[in-house]
Length: 568
Image (cartoon, rainbow, N blue to C red; front, side):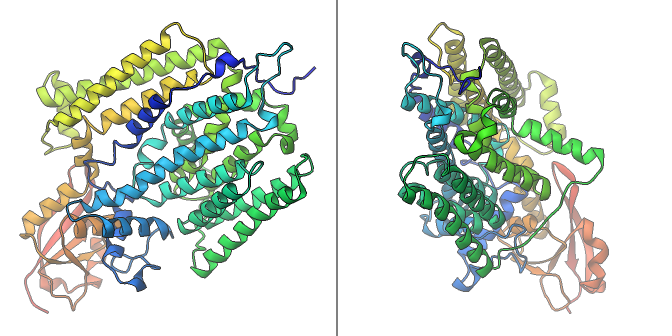
């Protein structure tokens, strides 16, 4: 006889995760990466460059953000608006790049909150409930749903692919935010309608304005189709059934019309090739980017396989599978595969959460030990290399850093050291708590992955932040250009990328002008990869080669500097 659900959960296994501890963990994950660093290449500095241009532009430019007439690769509007508005409203003492990060930090908060409430709503659905015991004692629905949501949120924080992309000021984070908001809205449609419908409308509109109108329409149509199928299996009122179909459908139609009116339908289909190398690279991306969620997702699909045959009755599986299918399809068919895969993380965290009440004790122990060894080893490596950079002992790590980042001078920040030390001590306490004797909770297997990922991200953004900033920022290269050209106010440029242009205008405060025969700037900057096309843009007789500047950590990125020798 097949049980109605594979989850067997007693009331004692759904005890509450302390809210203070959960909030502190989220803050320790969110805040590092938003403070004390420069915009990084490539997507981070590029998106920030468009925000800077909008913040100083007139109203007519807001629907067409450009850098020297070059449109963004991602046809987004809202992320650039938010960054520009934040810079315009920020006080004068606040750095522009930090001000631009503030709305994105709030969006990351919304990702975590919306994912938690989405899982909570799905875990309260009838198909997700654990087996009822003959003499009582099974987990109560509200307590069970809260514990499942805690476990799913911990799994999301522990996901390796979330860390860097969720701390950049790019459209990818905005798309993730509005995907999570839509996920919550569709998951909560079985109960009250006002707040879920508002979340769906805001989520689909935000996705459209963040460069993903096709994804928004697919989510809306999928929600309407599932609402039509689900209403045949539930005893809800006719009005509720109607809104579960009409709400997502109307929102999808409205977002499609909005995208058309703003000319946001720009198709960039790039399916993977047939070579083994491309598919192997894509497979590796799936494996590391979604770790440690994907093994738990596979376990969920196996243990809940009988419920998969009747998805209209099991919305806790249907909704995350819909979001996962759309995100994985987008990953396979678009060039930015990692940023498209980011949209799958709320759904993956939900599916992974439903593996927790079915895990055997041996599997849970295996997860704990692997996580403990992996993240403890990573933390030790980070500390050893930092000590080597500061004290020169041991010598080899510092020598490796000097080789990879020539010209870097280590610096010591007392505040960063205290934060890193506090995070390490918290990790040691967490490990001691986890291996100690205490009552089990279904979210316990996700504590070490979330804590370990937070620890390593905190250490990277405190102890290693100076060297990472030196390696990932354009600031050192721009500073070298300023020294060689005596800080010019006007330079001509040729063949420069969006990120390079943004860096010259932000870090160097340079007025960049496209290379042409009519321009009169005293210096010309050329990307070495496009030097062959330079004679078509300028008169070679008016310029002489002066010097070349390379990024310290990327010898393939070289800027050639030319000095004017004749006035046109």
